[in-house]
Length: 116
Length: 114
Figure 1 (cartoon, helix red, strand yellow):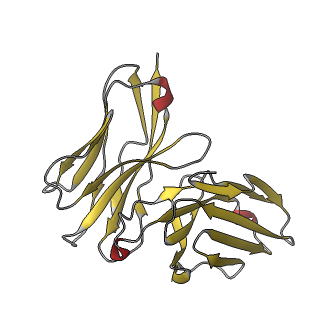
Figure 2 (cartoon, chains in turn green, orange):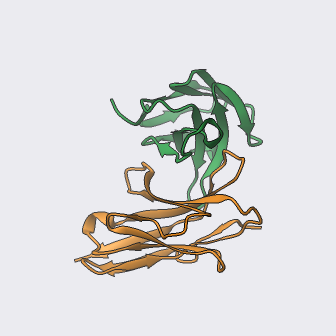
């Protein structure tokens, strides 16, 4: 596997379900990101993990819970979601500039989430 | 205030022609980076090109070039010799110094026709 992978690619869940999105990067990067892309809205940054520590939490509701067990893996745990949470969830990784990296973010293919 | 503005919701171009996608940005930070991404219907955001605020020359990557006009705060993407596979959404993004945040524009949908 190369680049950034995400599973599942599609997910349909009810409002009472609990599910998790998985992201894995094979680029040796030290930062990982979760973005939300809703229809007709700009991409919204949700969370940033730098060297496995969360450094950004953009006022995201607590029903979204990120986890970064190591620099290659990132999870987004979902519970009691709302229909308005239906969106494309994109994961990205980069090498941080302050760590000597180029900071270009490389994205995975996304998980298209539908909440019924 | 909106940081990244893409004023063209949609653009059409004929195959083999060149097309320019507009992007203007707003920042008071002298150090920043500008990015263009392509998003096909499959959803993946594909990195195309990067321009640093201190770069003296316009960035180029194959058929992609970035027309960087610092005084105007514009960073337009030029795609030369368009191909049918170039049909996609294109997003301009900016990262200000000392942050890990990419701020995205609303995108431009490019359609290439034969």
